[in-house]
Image (tube, rainbow, N blue to C red; front, side, top):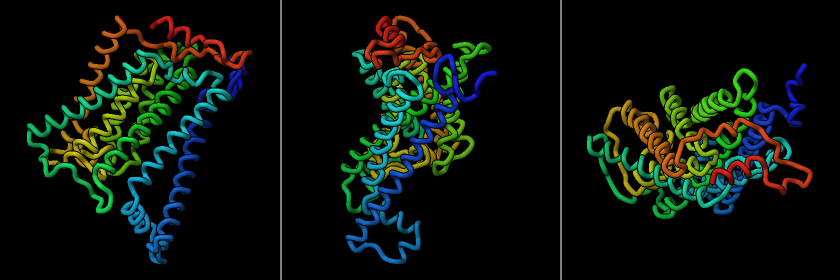
Length: 356
């Protein structure tokens, strides 16, 4: 009888348990870090004489004061800490749980990798610009101001810069978690006799994108429609990973999609407003088209952008590689930890180098 927790052939825990451990440690770390940062902010408020007994008894008001005084900086610190935690937990998971090299999660850096990153950055900005131009042309949004901020103390330019750094962190750590770790481990775990590498990869692609969508169900203004659309967005983000085996395109796309959506064109980002925007807008169109208070991802226009982006991604990969090759190696585990502590090139590294 097979051990449900341990894969004797691969000499490691089974994929489900690996995902639970890595994701659990990461989530616990982010929650703990958030609590610590909140206590630090409370201590700063106390030192500034802005704290009183009424605030301590009203968590909602206390949170509002924190966000009004140093909210953008607090959020930025949280995002930076999350990035550090995902790198740390995935590095340790690679060594002790997965028995692979960290770079095999999608970081085989090369000239091509950074070209792919640049394409992803360009694509995210392009798609959001198209969404804005279409909505503006049809009268679904109106421009009400330029370079505006909700803060009375922090300049708009500073908040926009904080947001850019924050979205860089979010783009990296969310892609590392959902595509690099969860998708990869699911694909390997589902690669059994009935499904094989092909079936395992495609099922993992769907499941990991669904987890990505469900994770956003807790966002403000989320709904069933927004969740389904975020699942589609997860498939879109994962497409570059499926076609290249690297996280460059998904990371670049994720960063600029969010940044241009919120801080350039003034749309809500997955239900959350931005503290400062280059263009301030008022939405006038129907929610089923524009996505309303959740943002374009929850509307028809977001789905159209996802379809266009998917086509452009396919064309880019075909143009730069000469052909389209689904990276079924993502579902084919090869241990990369060897007797010389991983100093030799792994099986996957050799495959990547051969394709350059």
